[in-house]
Structures are given as C-alpha cells and as structure tokens.
Amino acid sequence: MTEIPNRPEAIRVALIGTGNCGSLALRQLIDDPRFDLTGVWVSSDAKVGKDAGELAGLDVTTGVTAINDLDAIIAEKPDAIVYCAMGDTRLPQAMADIRQILSAGIDVVGSAPGVLQYPWQVIPDKYIERIEDAARQGDSSVFMTGVDPGFATDLLPFALAGTCQRIEQIRTMEIADYASYDGATVMFEVMGFGNQIGDFPLLFQPGVLSIAWGTAIRQLAAGLGVEVDEIKDSVEQEPAPEDFDVAVGTIKKGTVAALRFQIEGMVKGKPVIVVEHITRLRPDLRPDWAQSAQPGGSYRVEIVGEPSYTMDICPTSRNGDHNYAAILAAAGRIVNAIPDVLAAPPGIRTTLDMPLVTGKGLLRL
Image (cartoon, rainbow, N blue to C red; front, side, top):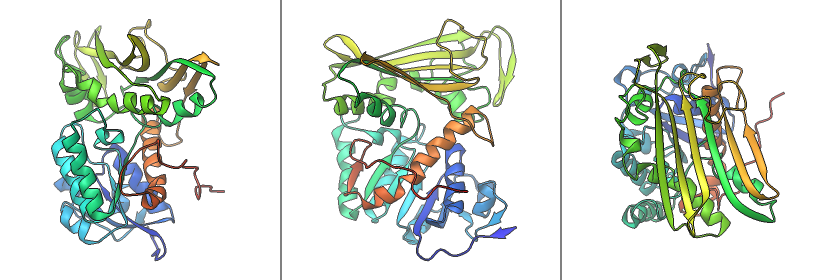
C-alpha cells in the first residue's frame, strides 16, 4: 500500500461527507497534487477511524483518519472545505454547517445545500443574508454546484446561448435509468420509487420542485437578462408492471418505477426556461417519454432560437456506469473549482461570476 507524500505547497482541503459524491471528490483530493488533505468528516460511526484512502477506494494510506467532529475539522484551519454531506433531508443542519465554516474563515465548495447554487428569489432573503453575513465575517466564499442542477443547467446552456442571435426557449433534461443508483435515501425518501402511485414524497409536494430546481431557472433567467413571472412544476408517475430488483431493493408491482417531472420558468405566460427529468428504473417503461442519447442515461440541452441547438452530454467512465460517471463529473466540477473559489470575493458565488474552470493541471500522460 502506497503512502501519500507531504505536499507543503499544496492547497489544504478537508472533506465533509463520503457518500456517492463525497467519496469521488475525496479520491481526487488524494490523487491530485494540487491539494493536501487535512481531514475527513463522516456521519456513519462505522466509518470513523478509517483512513481516507480506504474511504476513497484507493490502495493508499493518507494518514488522515475519518472523524465525526466538525469542530475538529475546522480547528485544522484548511484553506477550503468540500461539503458533500446530505443536504436534501437535513437542510437546516447543512445551512448551519456552512455558516459555521464560513465564519471560521474557510471557503466552501460542494454539492449541498443545493439551494445555494443560486438562492435569490428561491429561498427567503433572511436565510441568504445569514450565509452572506458569515462569509463577510470570515472573509470567505461559497460555491455550490453539481450536474443537474449544476453545469448541465447553467454552464453548458450559457455556452450555447452565447452563440445565438435570438432565443425563444431553453430546455435542459436529465434522461436516466436509476436502477443501478445505490443511494437509498434519494431513491426512496426523496424520489419516492417503490411508493404507491399518487403517494408523493417531499420532493413532489406543492412548490418543492420549484425550490429544488428554482436555482437553475433563476440563474438561467439572470444570465439571459429576463424576469421570470412564475415557476410551475408538475410530475407524472408510472407503475411497475411486475416485481423487479434494483440496486437499492425490490420495486413491487404497481408501485412507482418511472417518473417524469418538469419545472417551467414562465415569462409573459410562456415556458421560456424549462428543466425536465425523466427517470426510469427499467428502459422499457414509458417509451413515449424522451429517450437518452446513450444506453443508461444522458443529459440534454435544447435551445429554440436562431440558431437552435440540441446538445447531448453522455458521461462514461472506465470504473462504473452512467450514474457513476455523472456523479464523478459533479465531484470533478466541485474539486476543480477550489482554486478559483479561494481567489473569489467573499459571499455566495455562482456560475455567473465564477471564471471558467478549464481543467488546468489535470493532464495525465
């Protein structure tokens, strides 16, 4: 087993959360010579005391063992913290963690809370101001990102929109088979797979989708220079035709096995900015819904205008399937943004005011 050498000139970074995204971010923090890992926080008692290399699935020893004490992580005074702890089901706690870290003068880059990707007109101003106050106190900044919401709903649409002479609508889509996704909390509690038809989880309660993806709608609107009058959301559920197994368990006949939901940013009565998700647990379900550009799943950006565009993004990996590759992309976007977040002014930073992350330092021959 290889030992990781000291990196005295590297950026000192700690990691919070070693789930699907966090473990992949951790892998890069260990492998990438730009960074020096100072600590790892975990929520599971079973992970406490394990070396970071083991938690990242690497055959290396880092000398950094996992703890569940956030104060101790902060006391090491890293330059930045990568925050990948669950935010969907523990939003107040995640927001409190971010404030504590920022107040201590530590920059934050991460995947959660997702509302911080672009919180204006999405969450009440008082919650935004608390984050901004903490950032001013610590002279620190925070940048949240991901895939969708994330670079597939902001960075890539903006890149295409910048070549248009006229735009009538922007639609971003995730079209994916989640059968191999092994996050039980997301699958059952957040998305409601395996529920009875009409039994909607928290994500599909009135207005929740408009908050969860409101960050994408509002950020695209800001970049386009338009005012969204209203955000509408809707969801369709499709039942399983028989019992079948997926990574997180058994989906019973008649329970939810496919979903289609969309969030529409309305401008003068027209859906100008649309986010659509089609999530299946079997590829044969609802063939009339949009199909992915590669087996398993893809992302799509559609622009109706002059010129019009359809761009399909097909993440793949040597080490996993499409779901793994998409999470890997989110982790890469997070970690690669660290140097620019350190250089950014204090406060909540977004794709609109972050410089283009180019992949500098990533070439491996």
